[in-house]
Length: 258
Image (cartoon, rainbow, N blue to C red):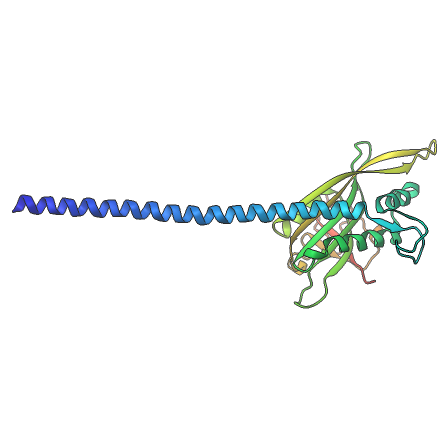
């Protein structure tokens, strides 16, 4: 009887051990399946965002605009690519006037409208020639409001360098960037010829975020003209000075009210 009892206990123990192993394997497979599905969903969502951003960027840069003031592309006598208008404006003084900036902003908002209610984004054009310092031709920020139901906020911004942009984007959380190389032209002061200038147009998208949570850290809002901002002046309001005394690591933005 003792022998049979011992065998019975051993059989029960083996069965419980087998059941434990099966349970662990089943739980592991379940967790793997859930995580796999979540990973695939994130990948698909990420790819969708990237594809949408790429299309929006191309649509904006190669959209047609009216050359006749006050007329639309449908009734204007002359139309042109938006990128051609940008090149023409940049040619003389390596800067964009307010009209060109507003045309770019309007075209971008139209391209991004399907996602604009839930996402924020940053658009910039930056020259990349190694022979000169990085130069931001335009930085535009579309941001969520502080209170639900309010309209989104729009800003033109300036930055010291690309590091400022990177730090800002990292502070808003997970973001998806896309970029496209473009060519601008600038008048050479010595021979008066038009020199080609390499540049990139970049668009970064992230889930809507209240920027007040990072205000004074990686972004500063100002009422001053952006052309007056000096990143090597530690007396600037909101300056997060580094060990050299420079206002490094932040983005200065002025709200667009029109």
